Image (cartoon, rainbow, N blue to C red; front, side, top):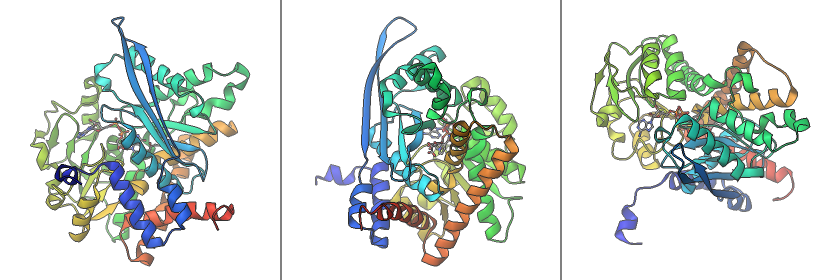
Length: 426
Ligand SMILES: NC(=O)C1=CN([C@@H]2O[C@H](COP(=O)(O)OP(=O)(O)OC[C@H]3O[C@@H](n4cnc5c(N)ncnc54)[C@H](O)[C@@H]3O)[C@@H](O)[C@H]2O)C=CC1
Ligand SMILES: O=C(O)CCC(=O)C(=O)O
C-alpha cells in the first residue's frame, strides 16, 4: 500500500465494516453469516435525464443500496446531497440493517439518494428529478420489497412525489395496496401523524433515559446540536421542553452560540424563509466553526452528516455524552479517543431509531387501513424506543462494554438467529 493510500481518510464504509468486524470477532459470529452480512445484496445505480426550467437536459445519478433483507423488506432513507455515492450508500444501508434489527422491526436495511445540491434547483425541478428517479428505480422499490423514507435534504413532499409516481405505474384498483411504498409521507397523503418528529423525539428520549439512569434530570443540562434540520430541530424542541438549554447550533452555513440559551422556536422561524439556514440569526453570536465540538456543554448532538467527530477533534470534546442523531457522525478512531476520555456515545443505530420506528407504524397503518391519532402514535414509538434503550443498557452491563458494541451484539445476534432458525446455516 502506498503512503498516500495509508494516509487516506477512512470512509463511512470503512468505519461500518470495522465496527461489524470487531463485533463479529467478539461474538464469534457464524462464518457463513459473516460472509453474507459483510457484503451488500444489491447496489443499484441509475443515470436519468431531467429537463431543467431553462429547457436544457441534465443527467443525474441516483443510488439505492440494499444491504440485507433477512428480517423483512429493505428499509431506509433517500438523501439528496452532492457527496452521496455508492460507497456512502453502502455504509448507510448497513447501518439501517443493524438499526431495524436492534429495535425489533420486521425490516432489513437500505439507503440511497441522488447526487445533487437541492439549493441549486427550483421546486419544480426537484419534483421532476424525484419523479424520474422513482421511475428509474422501477420495481427495485415496492411496499413489500424496499421502502424509502426521508433523509438529508428530502422530506414529506419528496415522499409524496415518489408515492404518486410509483402509484401511477399501477392499475387504479391496486392503489391502496401501494401506499406503503414510502414512509414519511404528508399526513394528508397516507402519512402518519408524528412521523415528522419521530427521529428527534427518539434522540431526546434516549438522552432523557440515559440521564435519568445516572440519577439526574434534563433540567439545566446544556447541549449543542450540529444540523438544524428535521432531526436537530425536533430533538432541540423536546429537550428544551424538559428544561435543557440549547447553547450552540451549527449547520452547513454558520455556527451560533449563546450561553443564555437559544430559543428553538425563534430560530426555526428565522430558518423558514432562508431554505432552512441558521445564517444571520442575530440573537446569538456567530462563532468559529472549528470550536463547535470543543464547546463546554453537557451533551453534544451531531445531527447532520457522517464523519464529523474525528481523531482531529475528539480530544477537544468536553461533553460527557454524545447522542448520535446523525448516521455515522463519529469515526472509529475518534471513538477510541472518546471512550478513553470517558465520554459515553449513544450510538446512531439506537439514538436515531425513532424515525424508522415511526416509519414502521406508518407502513403498518397503510397496510391495515387504520388511522391513528398523534397521542397513540407517540405512545407506540415511545414504548419501542424505551424497550430498545433498556435492552442496550442491560447489554452494556452484562457484556461490560460500550453502548455501540452492546447495540451491535443485539442487532447482529437477531439476524444470526433468523438465519440459523431458517436452517440455512447450522
Ligand atoms: N430524517 C430522519 O428521519 C432521519 C435522519 N437521520 C440522520 O440524521 C441526520 C440529519 O438528517 P435530517 O435532519 O433529516 O436532514 P435535514 O436535511 O433535515 O437537515 C440536515 C442539517 O444538517 C446541516 N448540515 C449539512 N451539512 C453540514 C455540515 N457539513 N456541517 C454542519 N451542518 C451541516 C444542514 O444545514 C441541515 O441543518 C442525517 O445523518 C440522517 O441520516 C437518521 C434517522 C432518521
Ligand atoms: O424511516 C426510515 O425508513 C429510515 C430513516 C433513515 O433513513 C434512518 O433511520 O437513517
